[in-house]
Length: 293
Image 1: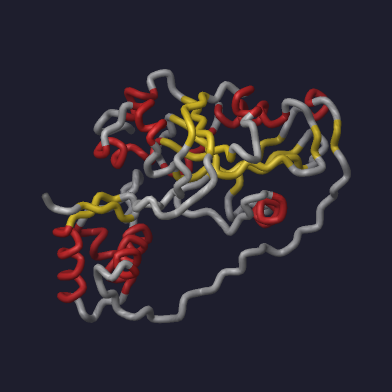
Image 2: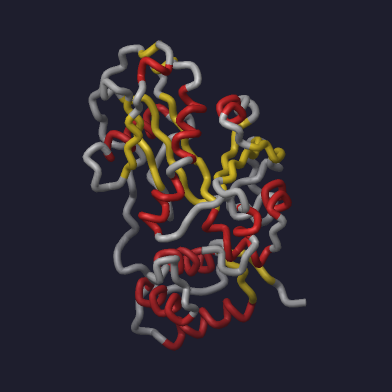
C-alpha cells in the first residue's frame, strides 16, 4: 500500500512528491514563486473564482521542503519578520453597561484592508483577545460592531475551517474525498471579542444571530462562493459556550486536544467544545455534493 500524507489540506502521495522534485530539477532557472505558479497551473489548483492558488501552492512546497521531502532553491531575499503587535489606536474605554435595546440599531461593519477602521480592528483583536492576533490567513471575513452612538462594541473574525474534526465530519457524513472538495463551504468563527468595558446582556448571542443572516452573502461578494455551515471551538477551561447555545448553535462534541495542523498526534492543545450553525436547511446535502456551488 502506497503511503499518503496530508500537506496544506491536500492528500499527497509519493508520486506527487516525485512530480514536484522533477519539476524543480527540470526548471533550475525558476525561483520559489515561479515554481509555485507553474505547479499550480499543472495541477489546476484554483479557487472558486478561477484564480491560481499560487500562494497556497508555495506554502505546500515550503512544507515539503521543511520536512526534507524536496529541496527548494534558496529564497531571493530574507524572510520578512512581522511584528506581532499592531500600532496603538487611541480609543475610549468608558464603561458601556445597559440593556441591549438601548444600543440598537447596531452598526455591523464589514472589515477589509481598504476600510479606514481596519487598523483599529486589528489593534483591538491583538490587544484584547486572549488568543492574540497576528493577521488573517486565507479566506476570511471580519466585522467591527458599533452601537447607535458610534461606540465600538465588538470584533468578529471568520476564516478557514478545521481540516479534520471527527464530530463535525461524522455529523455531516463526510468521506475524506468529499471533505477535501467542500471544506471551503464551512467557515470558522476564529475570533469573537466583546470589548472588556462592554457589559450588555444578550449582546453576544444577538451578534451571532445577526451575522449568521448575512455572512454567506458577504462571502459570495468577496470570494464568489457561498457558506453553508459555521463552526467554532470553545476552550472548556475558559468558557461555557453560553452565547453560542443562546444563539442556537449545535454542540457536536469535544476535540481530542490536537492542533489544527497536527497530523501525527504530537501537538497538544486545550480540549475544546465544537459548535456548528447551519446556514441552509439542506446544508448536509450541499456539503456532500461533488460540486457544492
